[in-house]
Length: 249
Image 1 (tube, rainbow, N blue to C red):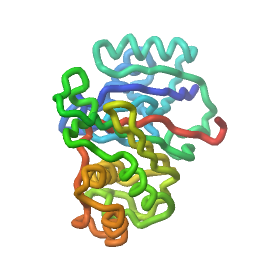
Image 2 (image 1 turned 135 degrees about the horizontal axis):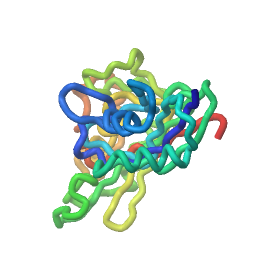
Image 3 (image 1 turned 90 degrees about the horizontal axis):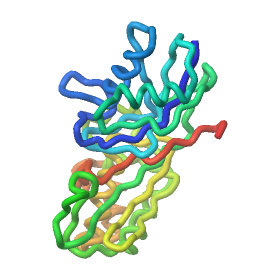
């Protein structure tokens, strides 16, 4: 039995999210079906490093699966990509790992980036791939407000009401807001995140950038520990699962 680690890129628009669900196609399902076309196992399970919601994208999602087939990592990458066909999913790297590697539980940090296109003109090519915000945003104010959210906090205000995490307390390793021409990117890193945490933070920081909220308003929202104190939730369009860190790397 061999265990393979996959690094995966995908456009999340056609999917209900990473996890296999009954209400539509998922990234996990597409991968499992592709692997099932060359692996001898009757049922192949692909375990991901984290879940992404409907419409959320990935540059470096990580997953693992086991197979009895005698096959190299290069052959695994090629076979999966071939059998994915026209699905907007690609295995960008594959490698053999030890049996104690687990894409989810071995991870020590996860990193996300949220992309805002800050211009008056509507999106064309990037529609569904970035959040279009027309009013001019102050990225410096957004960054300053974000620093109140760095560190260990109760993020109840910034989690979805149906979040399944047992504890709303998370440690945010870093939050950075930077402008690149007409784009503003929010970079976030932590060991783990709550459901909608990054989208909720981004939506609230956008209000700061637009001058509708102050830096102190963000601090007050965090301290409220109440979802109703949230400024707004950003759409999934601009959110990307960037990469995952593991101790052996």
